Image (cartoon, rainbow, N blue to C red):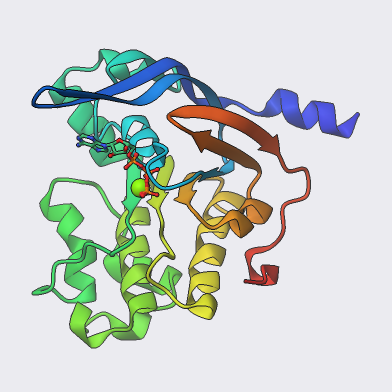
Length: 243
Ligand SMILES: Nc1ncnc2c1ncn2[C@@H]1O[C@H](COP(=O)(O)OP(=O)(O)OP(=O)(O)O)[C@@H](O)[C@H]1O
Ligand SMILES: [Mg+2]
């Protein structure tokens, strides 16, 4: 009984209906996504798995409004983002979506503090950068430049930057791809806490099938389509992940 109540209370944050993406390069047409139907509920940790070239990043990018779908509809809450004009789409990305990439994407000439504060310069409302760096355990590194930090620390700065604006949606593309096992586990734990503690919706792309164990929902992508969706009733804590 408890379970069914839990399900009923969950609100759908992201909904995709028959989403397609076609890339055209000169004469070559490539269908990267075909008829994707998908729902992600609020606060859920979703892991997208699939082989290289299967369309994982493309799927993440169209969900976050970084790239336009060619067909179908994408909803964020009550809004249809596929109907947004460029200004509205820009606002959606700036306000509601935090993005974390494999290679951190920090500005080399700026300190950790300034890399987070950069969001404010872009007109985005954020919490104090010192507080954001504290949340990822880097309060003592705020004056370090990226070159003066380890890969894991740089990725944590990128996470601090993404969460400083308190986005409803956190998108991560291979966030541990450049990290060793222990550092990767710490980053995964941080991302999992974003969903568990802060009730933020987290969608993570990875080719590491082990990460499926920490997800509430696992989406298997194959040749631009969804091959399988698995619901995990008891996801593992990221700290208990062995790889
Ligand atoms: N801008 C683009 N123009 C043309 N084709 C593209 C473009 N971006 C991606 N593709 C193609 O779309 C397909 C899906 O690419 P995508 O980057 O989504 O794969 P992926 O699952 O993220 O792979 P990986 O695990 O290697 O990152 C690939 O075949 C790729 O070559
Ligand atoms: Mg990719």
